[in-house]
Amino acid sequence: MQRVMLKSKLHRVTVTHSELEYEGSCAIDIKLLEAANISEYEQINIYNITNGERFTTYAISAEKNSGIISINGAAAHKANPGDMLIIATYGNYNEQELPKYQPLLVYVNNKNEITISKHSIAIQAA
Image 1 (tube, helix red, strand yellow):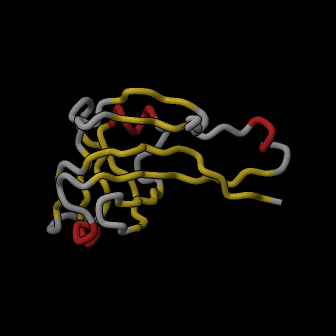
Image 2: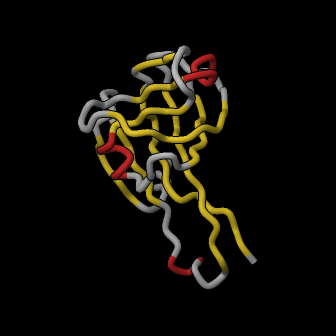
């Protein structure tokens, strides 16, 4: 059996550009792509924390260390500069791979600079 599992995510990135008149995709700072193990042209799912929109597109590279998160083409209707997003990728894993499976979770500050990377969601006690 194959299971679709979270492969990686960029958590709470901030949209820097929204380019309607651009060939569709999402431009992401290369440093962030590398940190989250996202390849150029890989399918990504975007969850807009600010307005609740959810959509699928693909990643393209933006200048390294630029902090750019640009929503392009038709998807520009779903996110504006300043919106906060979760960008996620998923992979297919078989039963033998699951015991070693670990998602890659990348967290950023309000300038899209990496603050921490980890492999699990920490649950804080109340």
